[in-house]
Each structure stands twice: as structure tokens, then as C-alpha cells.
Length: 177
Image (cartoon, rainbow, N blue to C red; front, side, top):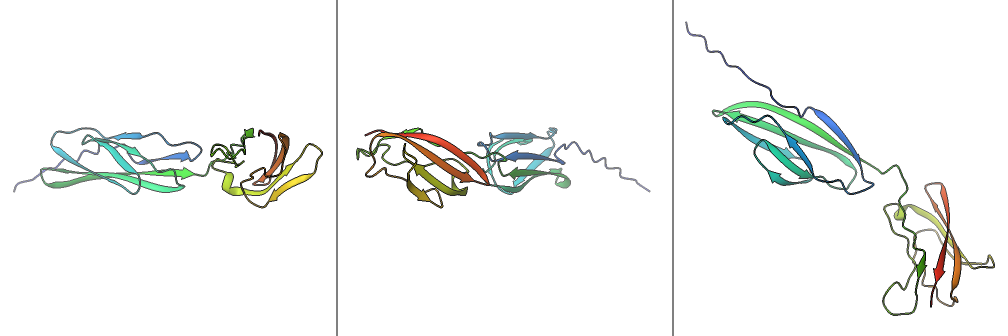
């Protein structure tokens, strides 16, 4: 009677999870498993793009969109199926409000900086926007992030009130002609 003994080594350390948020662009991430010259490595990524593949290590650029993504690696050795490891990547919504509210604009019809417009990841969540002149008269109002062209308004400083996710922001903007 012959006995065949197979030793299956499990050198994979991918059985884990990572969490990122979409506040800033996620830098490329490198994942690696122990190297064995007799193994072939097969990587699979549910979303994201593999930018570098070195056999037992890869570098992935994850997307900026919220969701759960999976990376797995399996091996074969001498045409026999080996082990498989998985890792889950969670990309969550940014816990902070991100708005870029310009402090000035120049509506002089020169094709540069002609309208006031709020930018940033949270700009789509703006529920209310109001602009007031120096005497407190409301001169512009919108229920979303709507561009303001400053038409019929003189140069000067204007107050802006923005409501985003139940938070209120008051800023000042300078209109320059």
C-alpha cells in the first residue's frame, strides 16, 4: 500500500478587510502574498483597476465610488488547485461635508470666473442657497447648487447662506467687475 502525502501550505494573508472613505482620492494599494516559484497566481478584482501585476503582488487603484469591493487570489501548483484568499474593501461616504465656496468672482463676460458656483463632493447635497447684499436684502435664492451670475449687482461684498445636510454655512463673497 502506498500513501501519498500532500502538504498544502496556506501562505495567504488576504483574509481581512479594509475601509476607506471617499473624502479624497484613494491612493493605489499594493497587496502581496508569499512567493513560491512553483505556484501560479490568479488575481481577481470586483472593481478597480490593476495597475501593476508582479505575480504574487498587485497594485490596485480603487474607484472613488461608495461600495464594497472584493479582491481574491488563488494559486495552482503543478497543475493542482491550491488555496484562495479574499479581502473586502469598503468605501464609505465621507463623514465630513466637503464644499469649496469661492471667495470672489468676476462676472465681466471674459469667459473666466463669470459665475459663482459652489464645488466639492457635498455640492450636490445643497438644499438651500441664498445671497444677500450689504443691506441684508436677499438678491438670489435657490433650493439647490445653482450658479449665480451677479447680473444687475454692483461690485462689493455679499453674504451667502448655504444649507447642506442640516448644517448651515455663512460665507462672504466679493463680486468684482
